[in-house]
Image 1 (cartoon, rainbow, N blue to C red):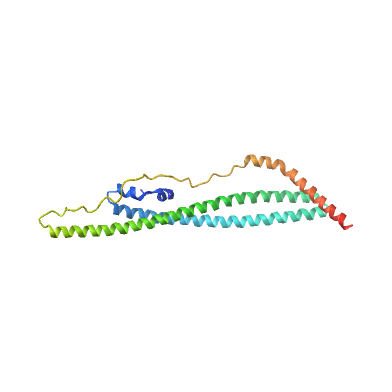
Image 2: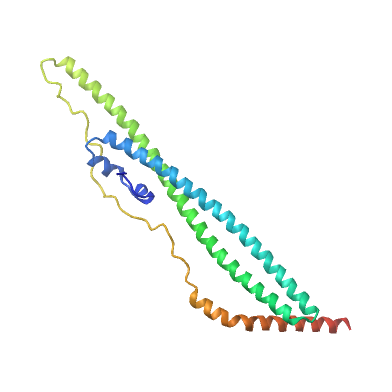
Length: 225
C-alpha cells in the first residue's frame, strides 16, 4: 500500500509527523522519496495532457470564430440580393456557432484553471522532494556519525557494553496529522435553464438583426442617390 494516495496528500503531508511515527525513519524516508518521484511522473503526465487539451480547445475556438465571421458575411450577401430567407438561415448558423464558441471558451477557462492548480501542486511537490532528499542526506550523516561514536566508545570502554550511547535521537517531535484531501475537479456547467430561455429569444434576435441590416442597406441606397 502506498504511503500517499493523492497528490494533495503528498503536498500537505507533514514529514516530521510521519518520521516520528516510523520505527525505521531512514527506510520511511526512502519510501517517501520513491512515492514522491512516482507521483511527479504521473502528475507531469497529467499536466502534459491538460496542455495538449488546451491547445486543441484554442484551435477549435479559432475555427468557430472564423465560421461566425463567414456566416455573417453570407447573411449580408443574401440580404443584398433580397434573399431574406437565406439571410435568416445564415444568421441561425451564426447563432449556433456563437453558442458553441461560448461553450468552448468556458471549457478552456476550466482547463486553464486546472493547469494552474496542477502546476502549483507539482511545484510544491518538487520543493517537498528536495526537502525529503535533504533530510535523507542529513540522516545518513547522522547515522555514520552515531556509528562512529559507538565504535569509539567500544574501543575506549572495552569493559563496558557498546550500548553507552543511543544510535539516534527521535527525528522530530510529533505535530499535525496528515490533512486536507483536495477536491481537484471543478464543478461543471449547468446551462439547461438558460438554454431554454435563449432558444426562445433566438428568432427575435435574428429578426432584429435583419431589420438593422435592411435599415443600413436602405440608408446606403439613399446616400448613393
